Length: 336
Image (cartoon, helix red, strand yellow):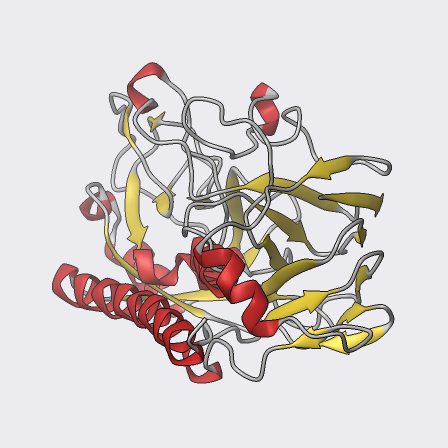
């Protein structure tokens, strides 16, 4: 079982939930930009939430399935097609042998995830399937996919095999489950998303005017942004006095303020430490929304408390738990 990459798209890589436990050695976490979409996608095909999937950025690839597969596509992109027929996202889909998956240009958001029942059969590096392109580590030879790549897939076994049979029929050109991830739980992707943040350790180094600008002005995501960081443009923020900081730990969503006054939001491929003042921190529950922001799109920030951030995180984890249990119940009811 395998996937044949006919066209790679703009940037298609193998990702999982990240490479943990090695930051003290300077190894970044990396992994999916939108881990919520990746985790839900894996659950929809009966995988563990940490299984490897394809992260598809902006212009999607063209992929041929060399064998029948149960798949799911989550996240946000333009219309998605299987054998030239549009298919819904956030649902399990059974695709026959030689089916071809293609994508239209995105209407909202810029990242989608293709999960395969059983998962991609690529080697783990330091406990993770994630592609770290700058180090040429993990994923598929440490690089984005290229035309002609043949990615092996694992055979669905046990639980994933039962789910595969639940959806599979002989209909053409594909079979989509009548159930899926409820649309009311989709991340709120809007033209100008409001990203909720908490104050960072160096927030009080900002003068009052910069604090007001941080909360009241819009910021545009620069075209110089990538998986390492989103560079923002707009009202330049200042510090009360120049400060020299000892490099300190940073994480996904940390908002740093370099000397030019244009904030940087650290993303999935962020470095392990940084010396710029950390003026704010994006809450975990909003990282999926942030990951879908396109270059030149604008965002705004809203301050919330640590207690509220924790509550929103618990709510998001509760949704994932509900999906996990609902799929188990559906298989049990089918008496497979």
